[in-house]
Length: 155
Length: 89
Image (cartoon, rainbow over all chains, first blue to last red; front, side, top):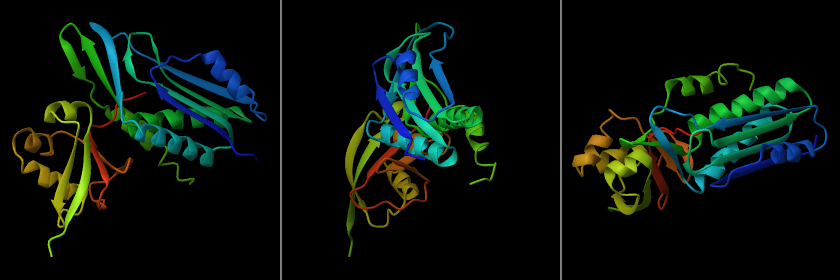
């Protein structure tokens, strides 16, 4: 199998799901493409969400997560986009596209990438409301979601 | 011989806000060997430095942009980042 096409992007710009899907579709050999898009939730009293990251480390961490997914599943293409800066409710914040010959690999690899992104990629959310700004706390459920990939024992 | 080690420290998100500092260069004594030692050394500054690293608030560390455990050894001239658990996605 040829090397999977991996595309990682971190920045303020929005993304176009159709364009990202087409880019994955153009890589030959796939029979299944899974796309996950995360949106900024409309939380009570919220005005905006600020996304901070660790430039340099962020891209490295996302590339490593994509590589791990490619070692675990036979993927043809992986595209990960994460936005930073100021976002508003319903804005797109994160995109993960995975392409494989069959759907199960594409589904599982996509969930794996999101679970690792949420616990190992250096992004931090700050919610801004009438009361001011406050940093979002990490959730134990995200850590538990990542750990389930360690318990399967097949690598 | 008392060799000093030079480290580039970076702080992010809530930790940066609490400490009022986003980056600094420090020279630490050679016996500051691991991330855990570094954090203990920083706590000696007192105030928020002591409060933030007392163990009541979780934090993570990266050496040269890879997440590491607190027992990881600090190489000379490393970039060491300290930050709260991540919340992206």
